[in-house]
Length: 338
Image (cartoon, rainbow, N blue to C red; front, top):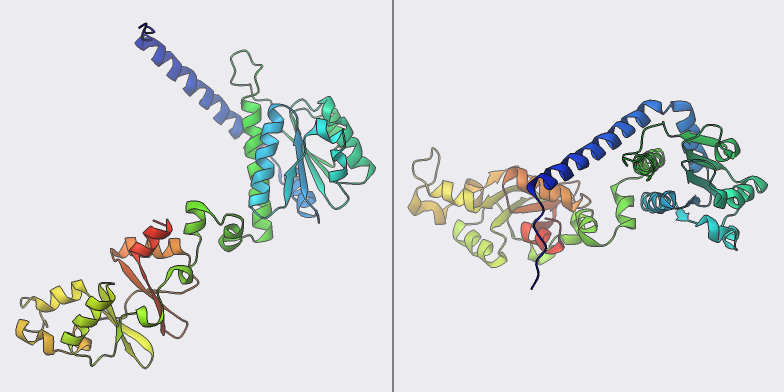
C-alpha cells in the first residue's frame, strides 16, 4: 500500500500566509467600497428597487452570475420579491419573465459582458428600471443603467490579478447592503422574516411563545391561601417545578424549588420553621411579582430571559396579568430553539 508523503510543515505555514493575505486584501476592498458609496447613488438605487411593484430580476454571467443568484435569494428572503435570470437564457425566451413593474439588477465587473446586451436592451425598451453593479464608470452597462453602483478599483486577491476574488466579494457585500436597506425601508421585522423561514433552527427561534406554551389545566396554579402541603402536591403533579399563585385572576407570585429551600432554612430571616412549612399558606412562601412573558414574544426572547435569570420555567400572562400559559426550557429544547 502506497502512502503519499506528508507535506512539509513549511507548506502549511505558506498556505496560512496566503489565506491571510487573501482575506486582508478582500477586507481592504470592502473598506474601499464602504468609503466609495455615496448617499445619492445608493439611495437612488434603493429607491428604484423599492419602487418595483413586481420583482427584482437579478442577472450576471460567470462568477457574477453566481453572486447574482445569492443576491436574489437574499432579497427574496428579506421581503423583496426577486428571482435570478441567466442572461444567456434570457436571450432564448426568458426575457418574457421580465415585465413592466419589475426592476433589473445587473452585475458585471467589466460592464461589457456581451450576454447581458439583450437583457439590458429589453429593460430599456419597456422602461424597466435598471440598476447596475459594475467596476467601470464608462462601460456599456454603466451608461445604460438608470443608476450604476461602482466598485472601487481594488486589486484582485488572486496573485495573477485575473480570477474574480475581491471584485466578487464586493459585489456580494453590496448586494447584502441593498437587501438590508430595502428590508429597513419596508419595516420588515422578525415576524415577517419567520414567514419566509418557517423551517429549521431559525424558524424555531422565531416562533412565538403562544406556539409552544402549555395552557388551561396544564398550568400549575393555586390561590394565595392554599396550604403548602396541597401546593406541593400540585407542583409535583404538573411537573414544571413551580406553582403560580393567582389572586383576582392575576399572577401575584410563584413558588419554586428555590423558594422551598429558602423556606426550609431556619437560618434565613423570616423563614418558616421546618415543622410549620406544610401548614403555611402559599402566600407566605411565594416570590412576589415573578418574571413573566407575553404570548406574542419570540421563543428566542423567552430563552434569553430563562438564561439570564437561571430559571427553567416562565409563566405567560396577558396584558391584564392573567396567566394564559406556562413555558418550560424543555419545550424550547424540543422545538429546537435552544
